[in-house]
Image (cartoon, rainbow, N blue to C red; front, top):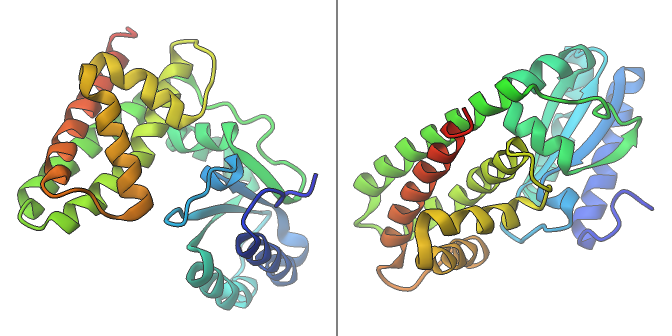
Length: 244
C-alpha cells in the first residue's frame, strides 16, 4: 500500500513533493517522515490541517534552510504543518506531550523511512496529566472566547470548530485509560458526550461537525454550542479524575 493511498489527489501530490524536498535537504540526517492525525486516518476535511513529523538524527541550520521554501509552499497548498523531532527526543516528547503522541501512536502513516514510533508508549501517569491539562486549558480558553466574542457570531463558529480536535483526542485517550476498545477520536467523543450532555449531546456534536465543515452555524447556535462544549470538557475532566 502506498502511504498516500486514499488521500485527496492534491494532498498526496504535496506530500510526495514535501518528502522529496526533505530527503534532498536533510540527506543522511533524515530518519523518517510520518503523517499523523485525521489525514493518516483517512478522515481529512477541507478545513483540516495536514500534520507531519520530520524525524531527524541532527538539526543543522544549512540543511533546514533548504527546506524553508518547500514548507511554505506545502502550508499554503494544503495547510501542512511540520514538527521537527530528533530521534533521541522521541521518548521525552512522548512523556511531555503524551496526548499528542498517544494520537500519533494510534493514527499515523510512514511516508518515508523506518517507523520511529513502533515502541512509543507514553506512561499512564503522563497521559492522565496531559489530558487533564488539555481539557482544563480548553475550558479556560472557551470561557474567555465566549466573553470576548459572543457579539460576533462568525468568530464563535471558528472557536467551536477548533475545539473539536482537542476534545476528540482527549476522549480517545480517556477511553484508552479506562481500558476500553480503541475507536476513532470522533467516535470516542460521541460515546462519552452522552453521559455529560444527555439528550443534547448528538445535536451539540452535529453542530461542531457543521462548524468544522462549513465554518458556519444557524443564527444564535454558536454561543449555545460553545457553552455546551465547556460543560463537556468539564465532564470529561470529572470522568478522568474518577479513575483514581
